[in-house]
Image (tube, rainbow, N blue to C red; front, side, top):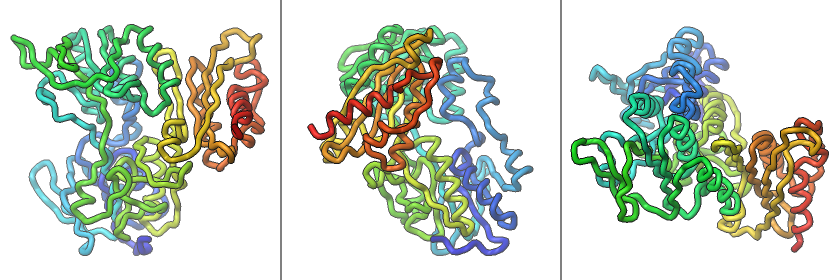
Length: 459
């Protein structure tokens, strides 16, 4: 645990997006006397990265609407020394200093009493021939979104290949279809949305096909090639076949940014992320970490995991900021709760899938049902597919997946809350959920699925 911050001490935060500014803001609220310096390598802070596909689609905008707070807000209102174009290059834990390089070439060594690393994650760019050529785009930051939107706005793109069929890939497929492009989605695994069980992800794949997206699963991209008269990408080599395209979106995942931590000798944890305890403290007592650069506890198994999500980053940042200035907050862990929109479908998941439970060595079972989103007598009802995963014998709730055109998002939160409380399937089946014909049938789909699961627990 970091020592109590001395009066007038200095907190340095590396990273100025979700986790970093949550940490700095929480520290400032608790300790008006502490000097807080935030080093941000880029020029964009406190923005909604999850809105980038909708920004590109033209659903949200202008650009400034993605920014929650401008840098000057933190400087003026929260008295935080927020420095843009400031790259932290090295940490000396024993001396408690961090080296910083600014855009003008100048350098500085800052002493700190406590340090919070909120360096985030970087998009995976596969080392394929041609991956650096114009027209091949990653999507992680606001400048990435700007580059893609500018390309689409220019009218140069009539077709696109998206590499990777996770959440970002699927959201980008919808965005580019909305912009009038022909879209091909290439996924190396056998199913889209691999965080779901195949029986559920197949529903999403059918939706993609119905909206005109060409889906190639079990297919690998081998290279990108320019056209005869252009240096920009014109083809992707997919399993030995040339597929014509005007642009490529890379959405094959992210990796934690841990170079600073490694250089400082900090211990790494799950999937190579910075190892932290429940207080967000690293293996060095004066250094904390939060967000996509560090691991967390998975509440279903109790094991360490790495699930980079904006919600987690903000919550961990708040804990890190409090503890950096002498607090005793604890991060409760994650269930991996995810929600997304894929054309007309709402897609949601929390906890373990049946496949993941088996990988954990658990004896898992499941129950799947299709029920109505509203009372059958009320117009506009849509089917919801719900899958509940449980541990056989004990009846312990392990997770759930839901897909439907409406009513999915808040229902998954019910299961997420149940997982956080350590509830059994029987306890979930007894929850007093609300009822009104415009919103739910008398027996909510969550309760129906839990009831079906109860019948199978001992089988």
